Length: 104
Image (cartoon, rainbow, N blue to C red; front, top):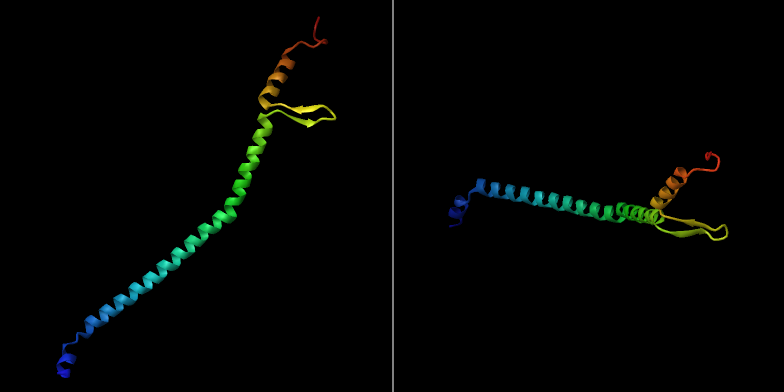
């Protein structure tokens, strides 16, 4: 009976199934490793690279607030800050107004 069982084993089928299983396991290991590295790189980018971008955005917002808002620059010298648009309007008015030297 054991002789019959040995004769009925399909060695080639067993080899093919074993080889396919080994290739499948190897592919799964490579895919898991690649996924791990990808996720780690994304996490690192968010922590390291994303931080300066937030700081630049905050810096740009601060600069925008300085250009668009009113404020006191130096109270001792009575210097104030006005929005850039208003400063350009005042400058244009000064340039358009006749000065005492140009009046006849």
